[in-house]
Structure formats: C-alpha cells, structure tokens
Image 1 (tube, rainbow, N blue to C red):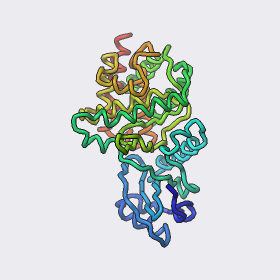
Image 2 (cartoon, rainbow, N blue to C red):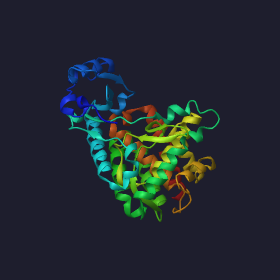
Image 3 (cartoon, rainbow, N blue to C red):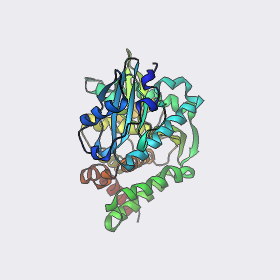
Image 4 (tube, helix red, strand yellow):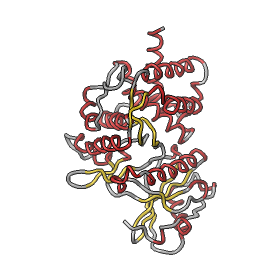
Amino acid sequence: MKTPAKLSSLSGLLPLYFPRALAGLDDRLRAHWLVRGAGPGDVTVVRRPSLPEAGLLMFELRGDAGSLVVKHPRNEAGAAVTVREREVLQELGADGRLDPWRALLPRAVGSPGPAGTFAQSRLQGVPADTLLRHAGDDPYAVVAPAMRLLADLRAATGRPRAAADRAPAWCAAQLTDLAAGTPRYRSGRRAAEFRALGRRLEAALAGAVLTEGWTHGDYHPGNVLLDGVPLQVTGVFDWGSGRARGPCEIDAYSFVVALRSTLTGRPLGGLVAETLRVGRIPDADRPLLALAGLDPDHGVADPVAVPLLSWLWHVTNNVRKSPRFGRSHGWLAHTVAPVLHECDRWAGARA
C-alpha cells in the first residue's frame, strides 16, 4: 500500500507537539489537536485502544491513499519504548533473512518527532484476540497460523545456543530492571523471594539449549493480525521488546499462556506458577507449541525453563514501559507474586 504523500514524511505529519498540559486529557481532545498539527487536508484521526499505564497514546491517521499509526509517549518511560521500537523496526527492515515476511512487518515512516513520537505503517487484518471472541468451539483454528509463523521465523533466523552462555543478555538485565521497577521486592521477605527467582532461573537454564534469533518479546493474540479464508497472518506489530538475538522459544510459550489466560479467565501469573509447581507444561498446550515447531521437553533438563524465562520477559517489559505496573497492587498480586512464591517454595525445598 502506497503511503499518501501527505503522510509520507513526519515533516508534514509531524512535528506533532503535545504540551504536557494535555497529557491527562481525554484522547479525543488530543486527537483534535493532532488534526490541527497535521495541517490542511483530508486526514481523519481514528482513536486506537491504548493503555494509560503503558505510557503511550496511539492514533491511526487515515488519508485517501493509506494510513499510519502514530505513537506518542505520555512520559519518559513511554519515550524510551518508542525510541527502542523505532530502532527495532529499522533492524527488521535491514535484515534480508526476513524478506519473505516483509509485508507482515510494520516500517518506521519519516523522522522521529518530539519526545519520541513516531509513525509506522498500518498493517491490514484483524487482531487474533478479536477473532477469538467469535471462534465458537474451535479457538485453536484461529491462532494456528500465528504459531506456524513462529516456526518459519525461528528456522530462518535462529541457531542453537547454550542458554547459560546467554544468561547475561536473556536474564541478568531483565532481573535488574524488574527489581528496579518493583520497589516492594527490595527488602524483607519479598526480597528473599526475588533472590529465589534468580536461583530458579539459573537452575532451569542450566544445560538448556535454546534458539537464538529474532524474538518479538511480546507475542500474544492482541499483537497478531489475521485475515483471509483460510486465515493467514497479515501482520505482527508492537515490536518494542523485539531482539535480533533473543530466545525464540519464549514467543511461542508467551502466546500460548496468554491464549489460555484469555480462554479460562485465569491470571497469567497463576498459570505460570502452576506450571512451575507441577514441573511440566500442560498437555493442552502442547499441540499448539508443536505447530510452532517446539517440543517443550526437548533441549532442556528442566521443562519449566521456557515458561519461567517467558514470564520474566513479560513482566520486565511491562515495568520498563511504565512505573505504574510496579506500583500496581493488582498487577503484582496476579502476575508477579504467584511466580515468586513458587520460586521461593522451590528454593526452600532444596535448602
């Protein structure tokens, strides 16, 4: 799809300067301001779902010849996310191994605007989580293409690596940022639970061989677009957590556990903690993981290695996006605490 000339450069669409005074106002008011900043022309602003705690405001700008998605940071954490996402999109665009899937990947458009504001191409399709609401008795048929795509990307960009050798990049930085973003786990009993998490990760990854390659880092049904008959993946967005040398396996598990949380209504933290407690991935998840080319028991001495690493990336990505996550009693209780409790129980049993 050709991007309209009016939207092809952020010099025309942006600078879209959002004064701090508007940061807490309704998105609709900011959308009207955005239209003013875009200048004359047939440009419609369409509000897109965005979470205040994620530190980002998202707009879709529609023109006669195409559309763009604009991300504007609400705060410094949001600015760091947009800067990083733009960098990742540029890396994706420069990686020739991804040429067969180029149409599925957004591309950064123009130059960055003020405070990290940037635009990217809009991808076509319907989010998988939206389609799941109408999937009837076979929700897995909806998400199967998303899992097969992971198998293709892993085969094209991945190579086996000893997980322990990659622990500094895959775990250490994440643990540091998670500790910094969750103040209540810095002292007392909770600090002991956090230390137990580090020991559980070290034990789980010992001897594990995982695939190093392009990793989305936040691969869930809301970030995958589908369309067509039969359904095919038409886009994957929100690459702010992406890494060219990440642990590929975590994308498949992140998708599956997010899907199970959606279908059952159970919090993600409780599902991961249950897997840690039982010591294996549930049988119900295995067919979907197989579509992504994964055997959860292959390449690991401890089957909880991938679930625990996936959870670590998920929670760390959230606290990096916004400090509100680390201060949210509800989010900590449902997403973080169950896993830390289970790690502490494991550590106590080995003492």
